[in-house]
Image 1 (cartoon, each protein chain N blue to C red):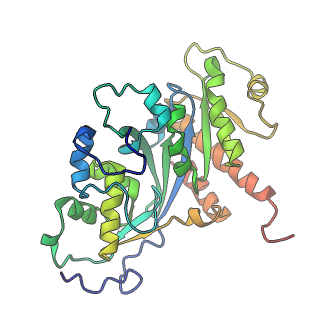
Image 2: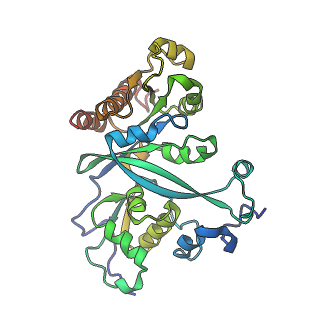
Image 3: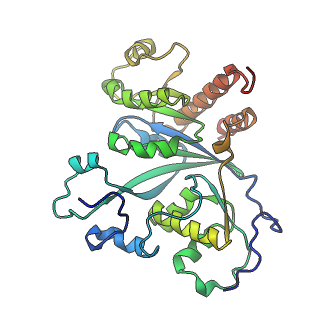
Length: 124
Length: 205
């Protein structure tokens, strides 16, 4: 069995190779980790140099023009979550997206928000 | 490459600061109706995730012919309920098999709370989920999915069988019904509100 420390995928990894080719084989992203429901938002209305980005990076960036979440983006682009996290981390490093930890991560959800959720559910 | 000024904190009128995404977990044994409930009350969305095969899963998954395979694809769904444009609930059905518990840890961080969906014919299937949330002090309620033909148990019998505290809400539901699924979520949020009220203020000795 290969060592657990070895995260590079090889040819025997089968179909996972193709999505991870988008990430140059990386299976872990750089920088701070982010939650499934972390909010993602493009920081610039216009991309100055779209040719420098891979199509998948551009797709993710397009989806983030309005506030969205990591989970929503992964579902929309139909790529594995791990790949989407790496793409998002790349875009963050380039300063093209801001990724915000949900408020609820930092502290317990406040009562005001809980009541808003309750009212929202009752109104469905 | 010129990406220009890219300070996300300044100069951008479109802000994500008001967008609130709130997680609710839905747990329970395999086939208990988690996906049905999520689908009844929300827009269901597919998600693919790839996870390293653990030693434990290597024992249970046949890896004959793919000995070099070190990750496995886990397909999961989540539900999305827009309560308002800036307030969105995300329902994550936690994979039932015990070998996916590593995913629960990520899902549980910051979650509003959890619903343990139980089938009275297989109550024991919900023990692991109940243990998990109790140990991590994650507020949860139990929802009994009343399948057609399922024997109707008395709630208090179920409470005893599951060894639940007297104040723990147990609700009966039909996972196929939007109204019923909605009532389950309302019961959870009400429970979390009550629990939050009872907690002493932090920082006060």
